[in-house]
Image (tube, rainbow, N blue to C red; front, side, top):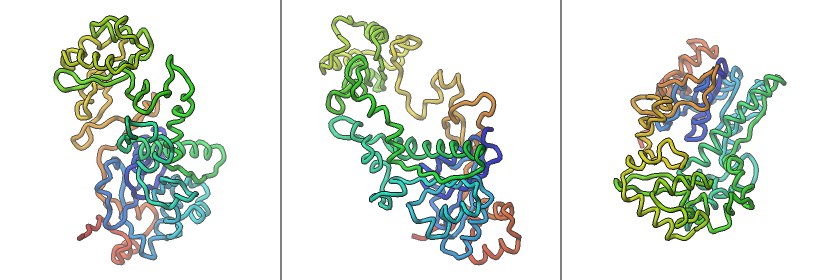
Length: 379
């Protein structure tokens, strides 16, 4: 695996940081998740293959424990607001001095600086001020679940930054601090929104109000349609040869449905035709053609689609079919772990590997600085 031999310390958070850690773990890194007492670690559904230790940050000894742990690490993932790690003397000034090769990845919503940097927020807020949310949806902006900010602009961009820093460290021998924030990450992932606004393809892409353009629901040839059995079909017939195959598959005359038309009646005519057959019947017509028409496959059925099944694009994780790691590497392929840790499950093991003695560990446990299982809140 490409990252085999690397040690990553992931301070527990939700969504973006766990994805970042999962990507690194899938590709071979050893990832230790540092949970807190009364942890929400059981809500982390992206913890496969990781180890977990529980540390109470409020106890004086916690800083020396975590500093020693990070002194032997390659990467640290910090999911907290600016200033939190510094409050516990675990900021980059302290840890990067202790371990000059450490790659200290700070993953936040608004970044390390600026008027919003210490303000609370969620995915929808980050993509809102990035400019991206203004381009999504119909009559009003519509958030794409939390995929854009948390996962694309957050976890995935942070993982990319870590890999870039690792590559540089291989050449320079030095670590560095990464400011991965979801405002800038979401905007960067969406760069094409800015650069394509004045382009034509072959029609203007963004000349109309939101929801009325080619790619956001305004075009009858880039659209989803309901079928006779209340399922859906996705159409992406942008180029004329594909559009011609699409109209032909519908059994209609291209001359009666000009591609350049944005008349709602054209879209309605296509919708009525799709309602005459089931999704499976449309698949028999369009599969293996260049009409760019495919079924909208539900999450729970995606692993059974013939294309995904052929490529074994999903794997069984704790009884649930989930996506395999991407991209595929020909020589150092990923080998994801399949079991998620119980918070605190590996505390003793990790402390022993870090060099603490049995007596020291027992003292930490007695003083409730560390826990071998998570402490449940009574609230």
